[in-house]
Length: 306
Image 1: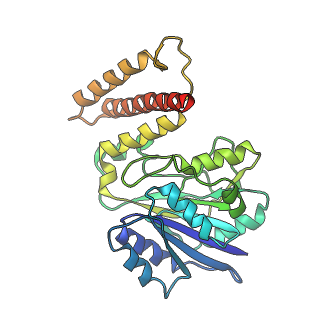
Image 2: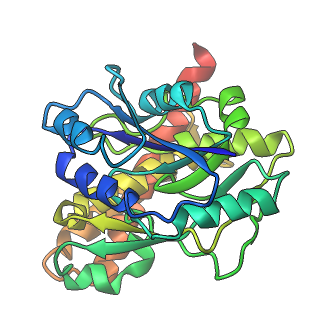
Image 3: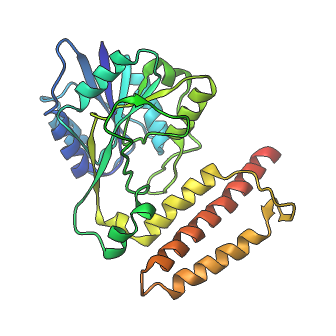
């Protein structure tokens, strides 16, 4: 069996260095042929030097994708992958020593599964503010926290895994490449490229597996504590997942009540900003989701008219 571990990176040299250090400590199953494909998505920092510094410790396949965008970089990684199974981590992730063993065991135990995913535990680089600690329901998504139980099992139809810790059989990715109109581009918080692949696979009867032992830590820097970051995440999720409006009263396809809901949520958020209480957090979420839904409806309308 051959396994490709894939990492796409952009201007996170120090984070990538730590991620590669942890990969060098993996327990490798006997007889496994493995590689680590690292795609530099046009970094301007010391990323190339970091990659080169690990060449003596890891079976590295370095590459560069000049087209900015995570989906472009992911597709480039798949082109280079020689493995039967593609395992993905982010450049700010630290794998457990048994992470690779768990995925290999799951791949063998579930030969008909098309994709896999495992637990993600946020690790803060500094103490988060009180509202972050309090509002776990609001921040779990932006921090990519995921735990679907302690037992390997088939994923339910409404359960997705996250790009920071996921795997696909390589033929599935070759048949369903990442949509380059989706996903993160530089610092722009956009989502959905990996979820879109899973959705397309499921539409064709494929299914996934939860791998409880494939654990990783996700390093959360202070910049993710910013309300603007949390808001941008929820806005992107809403834009991606918005359903067709049911209201008959619309303007340019947008229900007339949505702009008012957005304005009211923004006003509430600004008014309660000094408190950072539960009402403020709820208003922050409602404003982000409503704005994202409006953008999603408009984007779909433009696509239909083009």
